[in-house]
Image 1: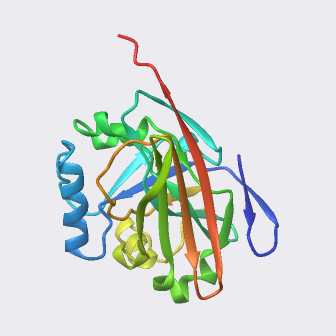
Image 2 (image 1 turned 90 degrees about the horizontal axis):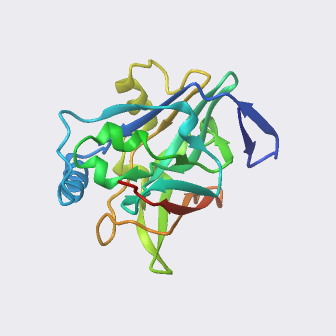
Length: 225
C-alpha cells in the first residue's frame, strides 16, 4: 500500500498499486522520439520495434522513498509524469524511470525491471490540470561528482497527451483503472545520459503557480563476480 497526499487539501489516499506500466518512446512528435532514440543508441540501446511501447514492471518497484539501491554504478534517472488510477479518479504526479544502462544495451524491458521507480508522494487530480495540460513543465537535476546540474527541462508538449497515450494503451477514457500506475515518457537529456549520485525532479503548473517535487539519492551496490 502506498500513501499519497493531495497537494491542495492535504488529504491522504492509500493506494495498492497492482499494475505498473512504463510508457517508452512516448514523444508527441517524431523528431523528439528520434532524439531520444539517438541518445540511447549512443550508449548501445537497440531502437524500439514501434512507438510507443508499454513496458510492464513489478508493481512493488514504485516507491516514494528518498533513497534507492541499485546494482553497479551505471544507472540513471529520467523525469516523467506519473498517472495513478483510484476509484475516485486519476491522480497525476512526478516520478523517475530509473534504469540500469548496462542492462538496457541488451534488454530495455529487463533494465527497467531491475531498478526502483521513485515518485513524489504529493499529487494532483488529473481533472484539475487536464484542461491546461500543455502548460505543464518538467525539470530534473542530477548530482554528478558532488555537483548538482540541470539534466532535463521542457514542456510536456514533447510527449503524448494523457488522453492519446491512454487511448494507445487501450483505454477509451483519459483515466487509469484503480490500482494502475503509468510513467508517461521523458524529455531529452542535456549533456547525454549518464549516472548520478542523486536525482531531483519537478512538475510545474504555471497557471496555478504550484509544483510537485521529489528528490532521491542512489546507493550503488558492488557487483560480485
